[in-house]
Length: 348
Image 1 (tube, helix red, strand yellow):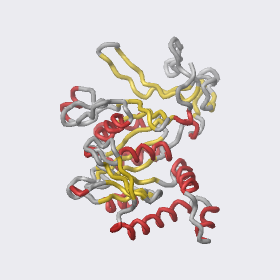
Image 2: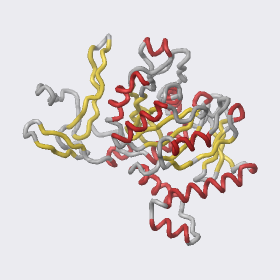
Image 3: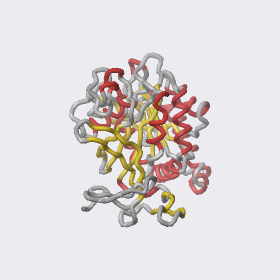
Image 4: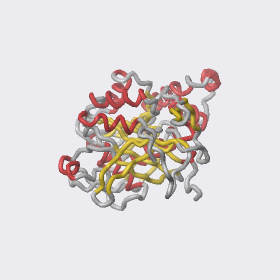
């Protein structure tokens, strides 16, 4: 059966963060704005899609990783919502191993927290490209610039600020897109309606300053664009986006966005960034593994016609259907009736 979405229009991503940074709340908004659900689930009310276990709903935290799919701007997004509590770090690590990209959520009040550092280092270990989403801009004490600076000082990351918040705490209204030089405000409580407009007059100088910084950080990854910029010619938006995407895929830079997921602000531009800057399966290097027949290391291309290579990263017990195994397919395809070799046990 033909794919509805080609591989270049597929994103396999995870949402990772310290506990209570708003991962599951952000995931619920992703599902709502992509049309996957028609009601926004609440962590406090125990009505979220991804926190489905009774213990998760009672405690209001994610204990096990949950996988969901969504569609956005003509792309398929396979999304894993991971736990944030330090006790479930191993669960996060298993998920990171199979992700192509990640959205790291930070609390705008707390900035980079201990578990933020842990999951960031794990993502480094597996070479997972990331974008950053500074959440909870509506909370008392929210400080976007402090949080963004901590991404550099605490994580050693070469971050690129792509948005500036319009207001903060109770006055948080929206964001300024530095690349496109426009404001985005959310005009209804559900967050479905976005209103685009010019940069607020009282932010003009700040936007000009941070846009120049953004361009400088992007063009340093491309000699030709650097020469253009030094000669007084500003690269086009498409040139900047293309260069930023390449640098992000290589893990050389990390675009930073902001919002308030609980207040339904900032999620759609973050989804656009997932499409624009995070990899498709075709952008990932061929997976290497041990061929159980020859006992030799082989590479498997991202090709549905190639021999099957997959990794089981999660097994759950469902009270209705029994044990379920979650696969990440690297090459080949799994279809109804496919017989699979478990290479660790040499059983089919």
